[in-house]
Length: 217
Ligand code: COA
Image 1 (cartoon, rainbow, N blue to C red):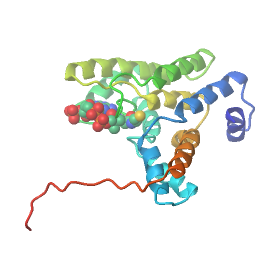
Image 2 (image 1 turned 180 degrees about the horizontal axis):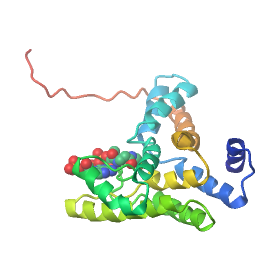
Image 3 (image 1 turned 90 degrees about the vertical axis):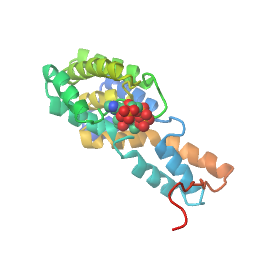
């Protein structure tokens, strides 16, 4: 699938290493517990809506920049920074403005996302084999300044999967506006497996909400 996908995208047969890199990236993105898009898929089909609607709900949820949309924003950031020597000032200024740095932090992990180092190694190997090394150099500077800033602010925020998928996808020749789409292709097996599991033993998902506003109005 990975090799054929790259072939269809670029019109050139990828070498086995590049196909392997995409295969690993797709595998790492395939499933990840009860993340927001998977939850959305399960909520949708729990009404006995259909598989396509479940995946559509998941897609709409994945595209948000706090979820799968982050990888495209990471690439925007790498391009905006442009060269390694500008990274430190760029990140510090963004944090000063109260902005979040895309590709860092996770709703569940309070340590490095275990998928991130695997993708970093792939990005390093791609660069060593003649790929674009600049993105990885900028990424390395961002990680260093974020480690310092987060430590100083007492926050446990570390690189996540989207931080390194951006340089990997870019070096594979995938355009940034397809990054989240590639994530969605990879996540579809996970979503559909969850949908099948949900329907096998279904019950409507209907959380309660507790009203905490003023009463007697
Ligand atoms: N850059 C800068 N600061 C960040 C940050 C980031 N990427 N992620 C979290 N923080 C800060 C928060 O502002 C918060 O500060 P506060 O206590 O002063 O309000 C603190 O770290 C703790 O945040 P946390 O509770 O861990 O965040 P969360 O669980 O509500 O949100 C994310 C998790 C993923 C939504 C968040 O980390 C984020 O927006 N990351 C960027 C988008 C991204 O990469 N998403 C892909 C996730 S796989």
